[in-house]
Image (tube, rainbow, N blue to C red; front, side, top):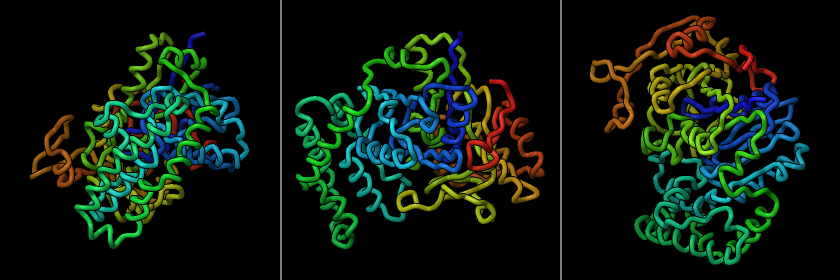
Length: 432
């Protein structure tokens, strides 16, 4: 039997329906494994099946299907406290064996509460100039890994001297907090939130709580120690689940309104090459029938009018990213995302049911900048500022012709459409 792999990624700014798509793929293809290959606990992938809802962060979005494993590859950041809380939430909806089905690469870098606190302190100081962080310490974890060259790996959670390692991390990050408290003394004096976030760095009891939670988690899940061992855990059919969106790419997104993760399929492609995978690989790009963005940053097709028409049940304004924004479908942005990501076999278009809200829809087919046609390119200097200034070039299509327009402009077939929030609302158009 030829093994099959489906690699999924979000071609937008995120929130395109990765959770529902992965759950539907797992069920449709009888997949036995979901592999997460980028990002960390900031993921929020909603799955609703048979009226049961869970927002997946560290566990794969196929976990509602009995027996389906999750594997966190070495490129995933692991937040032990977030995983513990998520497992408790899964227990409440009747999933009692999530830990037994969780496999974590021993090289995964750990995000601690101290990384999260430093992240939130920085965002609070920025005020109205926030970058749109989720407040989950992703950037701080990656930067700390770069700076110290000796990050806390998941394997070290089960080794002696864990307390000393966590204390070193806490103290190293606290030096940055001390500098921020000096430079922004007035803000710290006026903000209880800033004080509370800073206080955990000097709370020895809290450090011990973190140590004990980390120790308890590492004995609950399964450790894997190499990519080859990971490959041996793959099922006859495996789904790779991405986090965030390609337009937030660490190198080619619109800095500083991007993430610290390679949001393309690169990590998945590299893993399959490393293990010399010989089976069938299908690459799927996930989009909506319109575009959204959670938090600040360039958004050429943003439309207040459209936002008022749409029903967003699970994506709303929040404390850290703040505003959830909506706009017209942006073909030009999707073409840029495809340059970053590389070849896609099929598209998945979610939120197709929302097309009923309007008779006619705008689709952006290009940009103008300084009265000239503008096409963004990878590595472009000042791309963020240019995208802030760019204007859309719209084409208006009837609601019944939006999917055909997407296929025409991107020249990629559509394999799955989503017509509601539930897994059961997916339609498959090919025998994949």
